[in-house]
Length: 79
Image 1 (cartoon, rainbow, N blue to C red):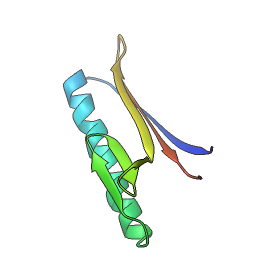
Image 2: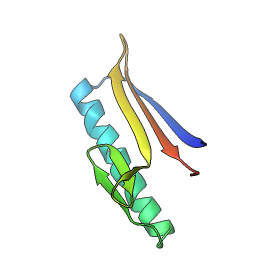
Image 3: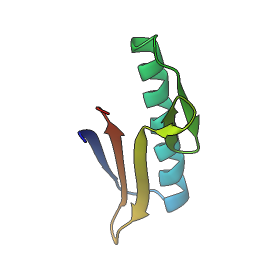
Image 4: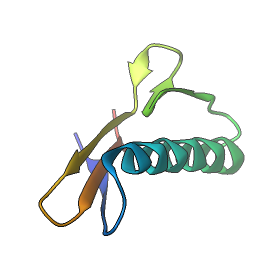
């Protein structure tokens, strides 16, 4: 299956702040998809996006490196 990947690196913040930004980004993606594709209804639980309540649309992880916070979010764009 095809995925659209977003990779973010942020310096000078804590892991907790990174997780908050990860969830904010997921919320922005949800809002944008629901706005641009009115025939779809995307729901969010934490940092996960779902289509039709049960089909997982995204994968997302936030982790810490020695110098930064790393966020990866992938969206399924087919299937």
